Each structure stands twice: as C-alpha cells, then as structure tokens.
Amino acid sequence: MALTSEQMEQAASFMMELLRELAWIGAESAANAATADPLGTAAAQLSAAAAEAAGGAGAAQAAGQAASPAAGAAAGAAAGAEAVPPAAAGAAAVPPTASGAASAVEASGTPHAPQGLIGPAGALGVTRLLYDDAWLQAQRLLERRLAAAGLEPRFDRAGSLFGRLPGTDGGSRVVLTGSHIDTVRRGGHYDGAYGVAAGIAALAALKRFCGPPRRTLEVVSLCEEEGSRFPLSYWGSGTMVGRYGLEGASFYRDPDGETLEQAMLAAGFGRPEQPHPRRDDLDAFVELHVEQGIVLERSGEPIGVVQAIVGQRRYTFTVAGEANHAGTTPMPLRRDALAGAAEMALAAERAAVRRGEPMVATVGQLETEPGTPNVVPGRVRFTLDVRHDEAEALESFCRELLEELDGIAARRGLELQGELWMDAPPARMDAELADRLARAAGRRGLAVRRMASGAGHDAQLLSEICPAAMLFVPSRAGISHSPLEFTEEAQLAGGLAVLIDALYELAYEERVP
Image (cartoon, rainbow, N blue to C red; front, side, top):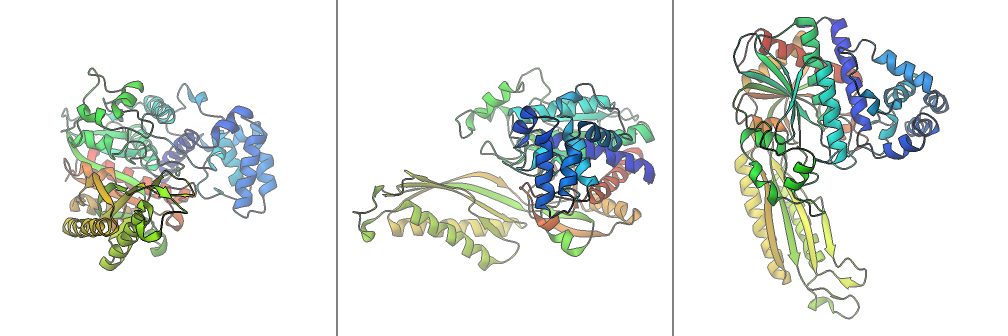
C-alpha cells in the first residue's frame, strides 16, 4: 500500500479542508452571512438551525461555539494542522468561519447537520455555474492550492484546471484523476467537488511521502459537467476528447441570452495563447465520485467500482397551441398546449415503467406562455431526460416515445417541435482498470460492489480516448443535487485511500492497462 494509515489521515484532513473551502464558494446563504456578520451571530444562527434540523440536543451549544471566532478558528486550525501542504497565500478569500463553525457543530454532538452542511453557509446549497463569479473564484482557489502543494497548475483554453506532478521516465504519457466543480442550482457539496478535492489531496500526499512518480500524474478540475447554465453538458471533458470544438461556443446561449463564447471570454478563457484542451497523451483516467444513489447505502458496501455508465438523451420540446380566454373558450374547441404537454409527460412516465429498470425518463422543467391564470396556455416548453445503460434500448425507446408524442400533438391539434441537445452514449469502463481498483479496495479491507452508474459522468467521455474507471462512495439516502447531499467523512476517506493506492500502482509501479 502506498501510504501508512497516519499519512492517509493527513491526506484525508487536507481533502476535507478543500471541501470546506469550496462549500463557501457559491453557497446560497454565504453572501448575507459573511457580509452582515462574518464571524459572529450569523454563523451561530445557521449552525443552530442546522443542529435543530437534525434533531440534535446540542443545538444551543453548537450555536454558542460557532459564535466564538477564537473557538472556531482554533477548531479549524486543529482540523488542518496535519494537512499535506501549507495553506496557500490568499486563503483569506475564504470566510474564516468556514471550517471553524463546522468543527464547532461537530463538537456539539450533531455532526454534519443538516446532512449536506460542511460550512455554516451551506444551508441552502451551493450554486457554481460555468464561468460565473462563484465558479471562477473556486477555480482560482484551487489554482492556489495546487501551487502551494507543489503541483504545477495550468488552465486550458476552455477553463479546465490541471495540476501536474511530473514523472521521471522522461515520457509524455499521463495518468489523470479528478472531476468537476460546477453544480446544479442549489446543489450539494460533494457532487464533483469530492473527486477534485480527493485528487488534489492524493497527488499532494504522493508527492510528499513517495517523491516523484515514474509516469506523470495530473489532477483536473473540469470546467463543466452539469449543463446547468448552457444547453450542453460535459463542456470540459467534451473539449478534451474532441466532442466539442471551441469554435462552436457562440451557438449556445444561457437563459439571459449570453453566449457560451461571451461568458468564456469574460472569465478570461478562450484565448488563442492558452493551451488547447484536446488531449492525446492520457494513459488512464480514474474518477472518484459520490454515488448519487442509494445502492451502496442499502448494500452496506463502502466502495463501488463502476462497470458501466448509462447513456443519456436530453430533449427540449416546444408545444404550440392557441392562447384564449379561460371562461369563454369551450373545452372541445381548445388547443391547450399545457394539457398536451401534461399528457406527453405522463406518456413518457408510462413508457419508462413499461420498459422496466434501468430505463428512466424524466420531464424536469416546464414553462408556460402566457402563464396567466385566466388564459388557456398557448405555448409550452418542456425538457425530457432519458437514460439507459444499453445503446440499442435507449435508441428504440426514444424513437417509439417520440412517435407517441407526435400522435398526442396531432390528436389535440397542436404543433410539436423537439431538439435533441445532448446525446451521450452508454460507456463501459475499462475492465482491467476496474479490477485494479477493486483489488486496491480489498487490500484496505473495504468491501466492493460492482455496479452501473445511473448518472452521467466525465469518465464516460474520457473513456473514448483512454482506459477509464470510476470509484463510488455511498450517498446518504441516495440524495444528490440537493443541499441534503451527504457522505460520512470516514467514507470519503475510504474512497481517497483506494484512489491513492490505485494512482501509486499506475504511476509509481507503472502498471497501466
């Protein structure tokens, strides 16, 4: 095994500090708490509310401890005393109560309450959208942390951040780990960010305790995965594998009308002098992630090794009818776009149920026009997300469902237009690399479950250019994309330990598939 138990504890401590720092950036309640009262009662009230929400008897004690700046700072310092690299210059940009107040809540006997709370500002979740201020602040924070850890930081032209630990073999081949730091709106603290924080902690620990590797190691904080701002997903990994070209950035617009290209340039990226994101030098990619499902929690296994990632198709449909008076338009004469869209949503649900697991279909967003209580809706836009781990099943389901939706529109006298804006095929993970991850977990005494991922991940795109594999750790109650997203610290540390051992084998022993 690459590191001793004590060294692993230090790496895990550093990882948790990074997660706590990231929890502040984009936290929905952070602005008011930090601006109005950065060290006092605002943090105390949030911590007290957290403890009360969890049913902890120590709510008042948690609030009192969190309200003490000295106690909070001391607790935060103690938690990070054994961190692998020293704190980077510029750390003051992170509110000083972030780790201190969290430690105070833990000391009160109500650990991590509510479930997704890492810092006191996280009660309403975190929002970091591609190229917005919170996203940029998070990437710059990680850039400083990489430099402080002795890892060579660099951004590519799309805005993905890499930290490099050069190998001694003189070659140009790379073993890569990491994930993404963008989020859904009001999301959790672990989705994506865990894999980034763990990757940085892993490379920092290997550098400190094992010296330079034979084969170069890199960690990446990918610029985008979620599709929360623009109508595309996997912009970071997609540009790395050639699925997206930077020249196409002008075709995508966010809800405010800003193009992807405009946002990219405003954030300081997309410039010709920056390195092109396309990569052809990767020997392997390992992504560590929270499961975002309930399989591991129910089975009791602390580690999941992913065999396959589902394919996804995402559509946006526009249903056009006729807006008219709600009181004077007889029911048989209506062309109600909302009623038609509702029938289409139910048709998607019924079709997925008929197909059976693992087929899923979701209408997640619906907008009506004119959106007035006394007007029959004349226009509706809705989204459809379809997933399955077999390409043929995904294709046939979508084809048949679209025919059914066309039939509903025709029967109701409506016009239906659909746009397929995401088509990610199912991806099989590299079997040999997956076996190595399973063996690494076994050597740590961690039980493993072989499983499929119902959520899409960057590993499925990177599998197009190199062997790729994924590690999962449990998600409490299967909740994700929510402020209640939570994984026990010991489980996070277990995933980190397996990642470190696997990277050591791949880069120091050069056992690349």
